[in-house]
Image (cartoon, rainbow, N blue to C red; front, side, top):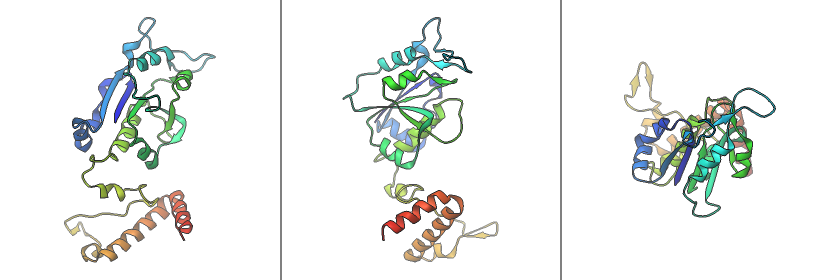
Length: 236
């Protein structure tokens, strides 16, 4: 996978993407990370932005600057292989399912905006897919880009040591949230590991995990619980 990030702050990267398992995958070329400094393509006295037409607060990144940055990229292998991403509250909510789809892409270009945003015409010209990372506002797209990249790359073969750990993730195979987990010591500050987890009875442990996952999901995420119930009814 080739990932290109267009940003005004290239020094932010690779950041967390360069450490631990993702850092190892980056060094092993499981994925490549190319950072493009948008300031290199500034025009008209070094500016990269301009005021919104019709008035309004903030500044917008120029379509000319963004076009020049995109034009500097090496040609894609095919017209369908390059996938453009932009973070916007108008976009579809990023999810584990989205990460699964992204993990199978070969050439992703992520645009990190700043200020008030960007000239909409660039989104139309390059058929950007707009993605929302949640109902909140960040100062720019760099942190969102790192979250998207990490969530997607960790699903690629060979990045995480045990594939089974991905199967049991929250939001993976089931809408249920993950059950509580414990390690040694068995007793800590008056709190003990549930005895069933020490029993060696694998079926009893599996049932305990399922009961806990159901209870947590029902209490904390009614939306996921309703999805789980609908899936269970549909499978009958």
